[in-house]
Length: 313
Image (spheres, one colour):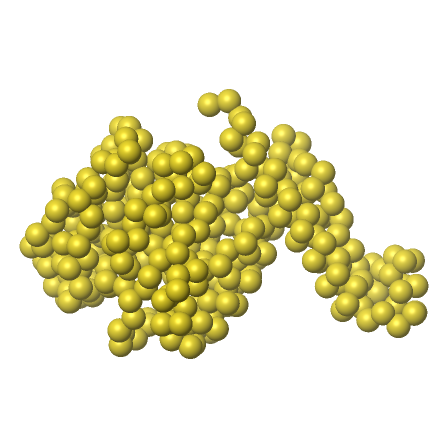
C-alpha cells in the first residue's frame, strides 16, 4: 500500500521463462499483489512465476491464449475481485523490458488526483527513444500520430504497455468490449477519452535486448488502424447525444464534413468551388478543414474531462 492506495501489478507473460521470475522479484516493496497471467505459453513460464521469490502476494492465472490484451483484462478483473477499497492497477510486461524503479512516478498523478490513467512514455525518457530499435522508432511515431487523432489529445508513445490505472476506471469499464491483441493500448486510450477520463504520461526507461517481436507489421497496422478509425468515430457519435453534446463537437463535425466536401466535387459548396477556381488545391482545403476539426475535437475532449470531474458521484 502507498499513500492510502492498494497497489496491484498485472504481468502478462507468454513464453517468458527466462525473465518472468526476475520481473516478479524486482517489484517495489509497496506492491500488495502481483498477478501473472500466463497467456498460452508452451514453456515453463507459469512454473517459473510460481517459484519466484515474490516480495508480495502472488497469483498466477492461466490465460486463454487470445492475446496480451485479453491477459491484461483478466489481471485487472482479478484485482477488482481482490480489493474492496481504492487501488491502482499497474501493468508490467513479463519480458523484463520495464524498469520497476519507474513505477512510483507512474502512480504519482493518480495520487495527486491529476489523472485516472497514466502511460509510460519511452520517448520522454532521456535513455528511452535513442535505445529503441530504428524500426520501432518509426512505427511509434506513426502510431502516436494516429492515436493522437483518434483519442483527441496528444499521446507520445501509445504502444508503451507500462501503465497505471485507478480503480474508478476499472469499476466503470465495459468489459464486454475490449481488444485482445497488441492494439490493446490504443483501444484503451480512445475509449478512456470517450468516457472523459484523464490521461497523463510519464517518462519510463525501456530495456532492449535481442528479442524478436512477434508482431506482423502489415497485419498489425491494418487491423489496429481500422480499429482506431472505428473507435474514433464511435467516440464522436457518442458525443452527439443530447446529454453529451457540446459546441466543440458540432464545430468539429462541421469542419470534418467541409474537409470531405472539398475532396468530393458533388459535395463542394460555393466557397470551396471559388477557392478551387482560384488555384487552391482540393487536398489543401481538405487538410485545412480536417486540421480545424481535430483542434475542435481536442477542445471537446478537454470539456468532457471537466464534465466528468464535476459530475456528482
